[in-house]
Image (cartoon, rainbow, N blue to C red):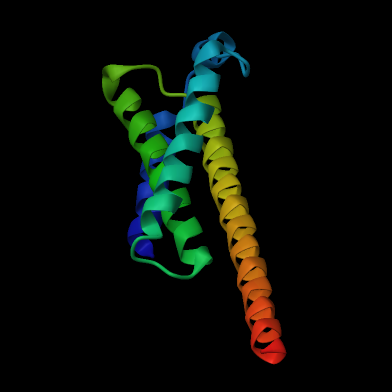
Length: 134
């Protein structure tokens, strides 16, 4: 737990932009869509891939969200090390994409699970009717 707090503080210190950088960093700049979309894709893919070894959906959601948010933190840390322009607004879009991708994947998972249960119930009912009549 302490190591995660240290990482968060470190990233906050590294990513804190100057007033001039904030003025040039629009909330709806073209790169914000990329941050959102890539984070959404990473979160959804992480959720799906984690289903190979994790049964409970909440653990899949945690895996997908953590993977996407970790990628966003890594990108902003890389930028803060002099390889780009670090931005809290970019990170906010990373967070929004991570949440959206996780919610999307979880929603699809729940819908598919509900559909499978409905099909199983219908199949059991059809078999019981078949056995009853013969």
